Image 1: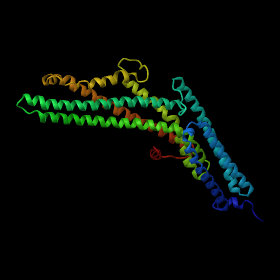
Image 2 (image 1 turned 30 degrees about the vertical axis):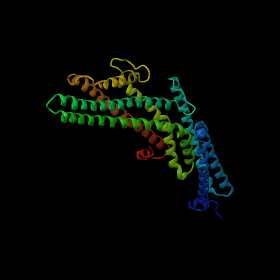
Image 3 (image 1 turned 90 degrees about the horizontal axis):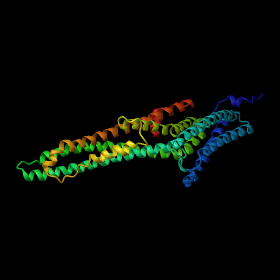
Image 4 (image 1 turned 120 degrees about the horizontal axis):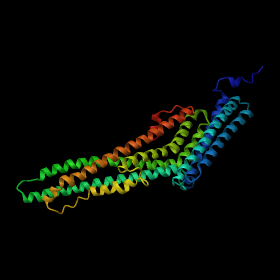
Length: 368
């Protein structure tokens, strides 16, 4: 007597398993062929609601599984039927996760909108809007520090010229070598300050670009693709990775800028102030004008004696302000950037473990 369950209990590399694998490959190829149509209409695709894209991905996953189940039922392929039944439960679990994400995003949006951060047509996440404002003000402040450093370098050149011409013409002693040594030392310190500030400006610019990328593609591309990939057994791991990355960077990463703002506000608030009015009012009204005053001593029209007399108080004191400001800006904003990505990477790993995929920190760093 022929055993109907022989094929199901046999080798999984049999003909029915090959048919199921071929079916999955065909579906994946058809999905990839549809990508150029989205790329041609990227401007309108960016503004599509992410809820619509995720719902379409879940529906497509159910259709693939349902189609596979019908094929297994029609052609008596119990392995394909079993695979489809198992994947239906997997998709349902992802659907529950998507509903929880939807509720979380709605609550987060309501909180940020209550603080005045409204979504835009191209960026529906108010938390990302708040993060972009933080980065814009940070970059403005860092640029002011860099500009003050360049101005200080010009002052040193003027001082060198004054020493080389004025002192040499009125004295028998040649002061050019000491003046050049003084300029060389100051130039090295200014170069170090400018280099650190440029690194911080680059980090702020990169995060600004990264936030825009997240707003464009995290929930409209990576999350739907992750849902589809998690439907298939052979791509379940990478699908879980895509889902974890999209959720953590769309929800958690923008929230880290709230902590950044709290840290910077605490450091920059004037002494004795209970709070800072407005968004970084201290930067705009105190720190940046102080930097302007730090390089306002570049008026060298007085005599050499007058310039030397005020050097100890005005000249060197201004450079101390500049170097301390550069060190503060570099250390603060570099450490905050590292902290943001470490927190987000930790959440990414936790979400992926929750979905049954053990992700490594190195994998997240490669993606970044």
